[in-house]
Image 1 (cartoon, rainbow, N blue to C red):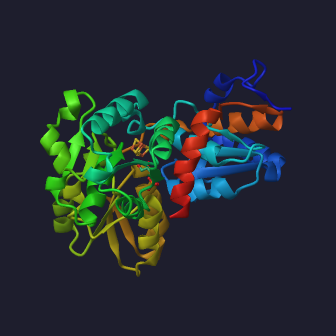
Image 2 (cartoon, rainbow, N blue to C red):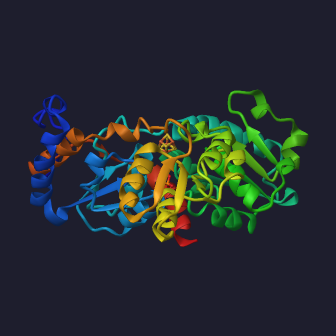
Length: 371
Ligand code: 13P
Ligand code: SF4
């Protein structure tokens, strides 16, 4: 039987002292020994030295689907904590999910703490927003949230969505209730509400650090979409003027952004999409096309290199490019360490969601997979 995080596990420090390139052969050898027992999933923001070992790459939605359909004993998730948690929720009992570095979190997911969300919800119920007379209220959460928040939504008739199905999730919720509480990304929520034609006057932001979310009862009652005050620090850095500047510098360039960007940025874009959709748009474009992409810099740089020989230009929307520092934490050293321990029958950095949370979070995730 594998033993988790045992004292005898090969020391991570020994790996961290080694240069990146020395890990390649070791990762490949350990991967080959594990064969079908291991599945390596890589989110598009992973660095090249890691993602080249992924059996599948994808956005959050695609990877969660692959995880739910796999039968491998070990799922190594090269991504961030909430992704590995989701894989564990959807996994079968014989499967174990590993996050090569436990420090790979998501600052946006951390912006909605379960106790804050419970407090918010009790205020919304006290204002009568959930009653049949007022049309009802459904909580929706973005995939980028803790398992506890997903369970909270599942238990209260809500679901999880990702950047590729947020509109479908809103439609699902509005077919059942007049109002939606959307956690934790205000930008994805606002962009989706906008696409659905919900006026800004019917959208409010709940600030968990203010009394009553900083909202008066009248503002709350007028709202159809209550947005949690969370954001992605990577995507929030893109500004509308970046789109103006790049269009002036490269006439004909197309601007594509991730829906975690601000509404004013999305309004200036030619297309908005999840990481997987961004890649698809560029793949389908003819030679000679130019793109300025508003998302994490590792993905943008990879696309730039991949499509240059095909005559397509891909650059970052801003001048500098934004790094997701937590995605970056997954290094080849961490991947080699996790795999070599696995070969020895030791499972390190296993992500385990408790059974009570797993149940309701699973309900919310499965509702998403069904819509
Ligand atoms: P995608 O689901 O589009 O890959 O986005 C995940 C994410 O964390 C973006 O910041
Ligand atoms: Fe979280 Fe933003 Fe990193 Fe995505 S890019 S994982 S939302 S911090």
